[in-house]
Length: 592
Image 1 (spheres, rainbow, N blue to C red):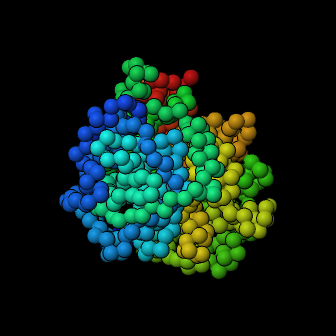
Image 2: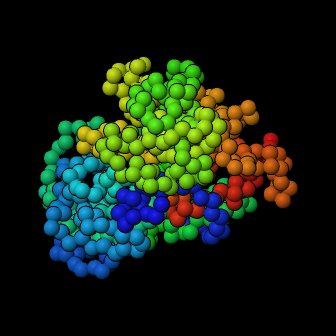
Image 3: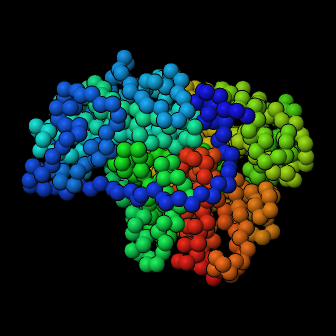
């Protein structure tokens, strides 16, 4: 199907068209995490961009500025003021400057959503009270706010300076546009606010946005401030051990560092990493104006990696709690809507649906149904009832379990069926996404930013969790979830995921490979898998499988058989992991 000019169609119609591009290109430069070192002589800080006068009196700019201007400089001192209260940013009638680099944005996207953000301050950090996806009164945009920094510079005439990361998210979509906001403040007021958007995770639209906005500071002691600070302190303490990607070469001499990130056009990379021996080596975070100031908080669109890390994980957790027979429950018993379906759901199980082998489809050709006009209608259909009706409007063409036919709508059906099953075991209002948050994400100490999902438009976009896409990751989230998977679903003395279902997903059970996609390619429990035979030329002495999570824009999370993981999130639909795989095998042999 040819994508329409609407950004919703551009982004959502192609939620997971898993390509196989193999392009060998130099990787994106690694991230540099800014640090603040208090010094006695602040005169060393000489600012030429976003100066005190710029932010107080305004200035003109025909583009975003270098991201370093929104980053605490090494010589910065601790902030002299404490920011606590509400930051109100006035967007109505503001002149939003925008430069389209690829695709189009319809008029409703040419304005920003209203921002009213409560912050507390903790040890040099500016911490937003609400960390999940915010659904404001705006026709096109939602947003996510992450923790920033506060500091002092000599040229700011006694004011303190702050910046924080934010992401614009397409309302009703998963696409993410990353930006940064900065301003000056004292105990009672703020300067104008400078914002810029310089990076995104979406294949069809690239855009720069920037400008100055008026703002107001409503200083007050927040009732829950103490709890927010305590929670953020715990979050910092529980972050996965992380190093810049360059440290991998130092820690493992002889490794080819260029293999990590290779195959992805640098300007289309969001971030990438390699998890080995309990350390997450992170690179990327390159924007069109330099390294993003907050790589650790840079939100990347999940797209269909959510099928694996949310929906499949949900089934594995249900099976661990209530028995492996959960996977063999019939969809029709927990989704009454199937009675009106044009297909045949009498023998279709939860597992069949997770494997994309319901037998209800129009074309067995790879991605033909997913690319069809009907799927385009599904992605744009709201609210829940309309979405469900389209998801079930597929004819029966085969017995379940026989033919792999990829459709994101099947994952939506399974997500709802599992939620209805969960409500028979818990309270009537139980929610399947909140179940995964409480039972898996929180125990893993994943941060609060991952604890919201895209939902249907019911109840102001708080309806049914989508399932097949609609989460926003940071590198820490991926390190934690891949470590859980590589540890057999076991964490901190507790078996969180059913080991047999997980072993099948990771191709560790030769008697359960899942459903065939093509020669040497399988799909099992929402994980893609590729078989690699012995190869002397690549130093592989045995046959092995690599299971991956994938997302349409060019998102790959590869689980290697030696317990390491390689991942990247990008937006040029490039899918490759073999270079990193060879280097991983050098560190720990796949064949031992």
